[in-house]
Image 1 (cartoon, rainbow, N blue to C red):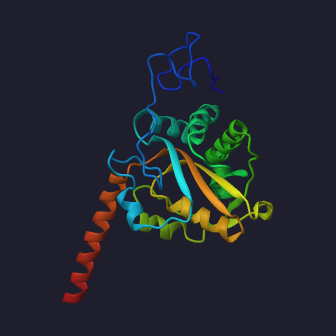
Image 2 (cartoon, rainbow, N blue to C red):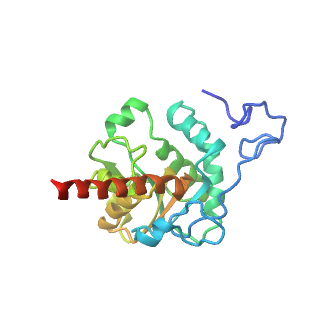
Image 3 (cartoon, rainbow, N blue to C red):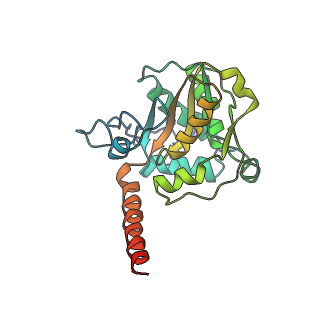
Length: 248
């Protein structure tokens, strides 16, 4: 177990008595303060809503992310998710709680994006569940497992929003604990919001179970322009395929 509060979570330098959320004096993590008011993704200063959210109606009330998914923030997510540095969940939750307290949200319960039991067994833990527990403790809200991953989906790295939406469709279901959340407002926790497709599908299942409203909070969010390139490529290929079909 890597001890916390001894070395900087970014550069591994030994801390000299000063530490803010596990950071040394030399390291900083710039908060995502200019964001889409719908999905929370980083946007240009003049844009209140990103281009994706102008075209897509998400079922969650709003989403926020503490950081843009790049540089040190991306490294921390990778370390928590793939290098078994579970202690980082507590530190990352501090930043997420800071972001939460900048909103006017008032959820009744905290939950998380679940993993399929086989995937969780292979990894040994669900990083989103760890984050939900730590965030819940900091904002003084109970954390509950309201969802289950019923279908083991394929890896979604590099997929566009539409592809991700199709990939996660009907792969989640309300858990036995979801009955206790009927009529309540839920805070859904995940490590990264990429296109919003997973958060949207989880929200859809929670609303179907009787939840009144869902907010989404993640540690980081992928910039829309990074996923836009994939969407544009898919549309271009789609047009080519239609042209080929007409020729045939």
